[in-house]
Image: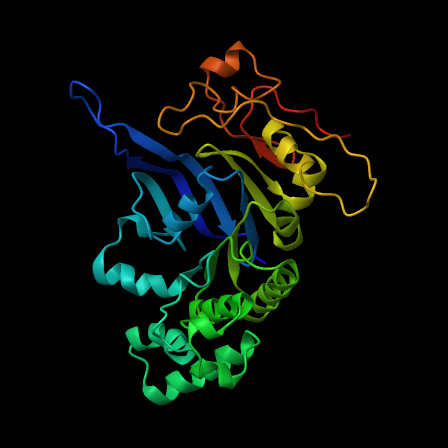
Length: 326
C-alpha cells in the first residue's frame, strides 16, 4: 500500500431542496445531507464510513462516484476533479470507480439474465463478443458462482448470489475503486461473512481500494483499514480502526462503539445511551450538531462549530474530546 491518495474529497457539500414551501414566499428550505466533508483515501486501503441512519454516509458514497451532483466541493480522483467533469470525459473516467448497492435485488434488472447483467458494462464499453464472453466467465468464477448461473434471472438467485452477481458486474471494467454501500446488511449473518471474505480476496487479487459504508461496526472493524464517523451530515472523527475502537476521542464515536454486541456472554461493558432524537437536517443546530445529545456539551458547543483537528492518531471535531488512553 502506498501513501498516495487515490481519492480526495474537499469541503464536499450536498443540499437537497425540501418539498415544503415557506409561508408568504421566501426561499425553499433545504435538507443539509452533507456539509463540508473532507477526507482522503489511500490506494489499496478500505475506508469504513459509519454512523446512524440519515447521517449522510450513503450520500457521501454516491457523491464520490458522481451518482449525485455536489452542491459544492471538489472530488479528486487520481488528481483529477471529477466534480467538474461532464459528458464523454466523465464517462471515460467512470471505468475507474464503481458502486455495489445495499439491495442486490432492486439493483439488478429483473429482465436480464446473469450473463446479460455482467456483460452490460462491457457492451457499453464496446468490447467484442469473444472477449466479452471470456470476461463474463472469468468474473463468475472469481465471485464464486458457477457457469450455469449465467442463464438464470435475478429471482432465481438467493440474496448472497445476487450480491455476488452485483460485485461481478462492478468489476467488469477493472475499476480501481469500489464503493460498497451497505453490501451485506440485507443478508443473513453466515452469508455476510462469505461476502466480506470474498471482498477481501478480491481486494488482494486486484489491488482494489474500497469505501465500505455500513452501520454495523463489527463488520467495519473486520474489513476496514481506517474508519470515518459521520453525524448529521458532518465528519466527526477519523482514525485507523485499531485506534478508533480502542481510544475514541469523540463522545458520539464512544456511544456508537458502546452499542456493539460483545461476543462473550456476561462480559461487562458500559453502554452509553444518548438522550433525545437526531435533530432535523432541514434546520440543524447551531454550533456543534451533536450538542443537543452530548453529555459533555458546554455553551461553546452551542455557538461555535468545532473544526476537525488531528491529535495523535485521531482526527476529531470536538471542543471537549475524551481523554486519550495512556
